[in-house]
Image 1 (cartoon, rainbow, N blue to C red):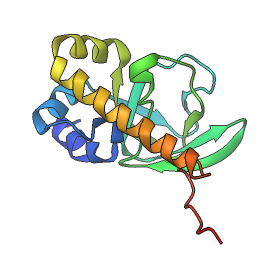
Image 2 (cartoon, one colour):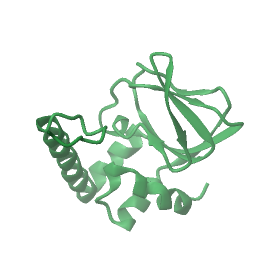
Image 3 (cartoon, rainbow, N blue to C red):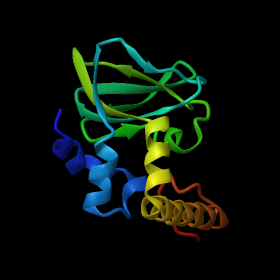
Length: 153
């Protein structure tokens, strides 16, 4: 799988939004290609996280509590927070097409990169701070940031 191909899709990953092209290339140099047949559970709700996936081709369902919540397709990703904390997965991801392909980045490899490149770490902290501010602003306006706010009145 081409790192260049994966790098072109990284614009969809808000966590990496503040990084330069060279920094994104450094992250995707860590990526390894993965393939999953239809029906394969890529990650399981509740299990410890540790891998970020960017879908290169195919589709998958995001399943929470046994219910399909969303369909993910090429360009979508899951596990970004797992790169940072390794906490429990909030959803299962199940491949739905004959051969879903992802590029996967492990938390361990990502942590090593951050230790070696303080610039990436600083920019990620800034991006996270901005996301927290957005969430707080949404909460203070009475909505979660996931739905479109409705005008008062």
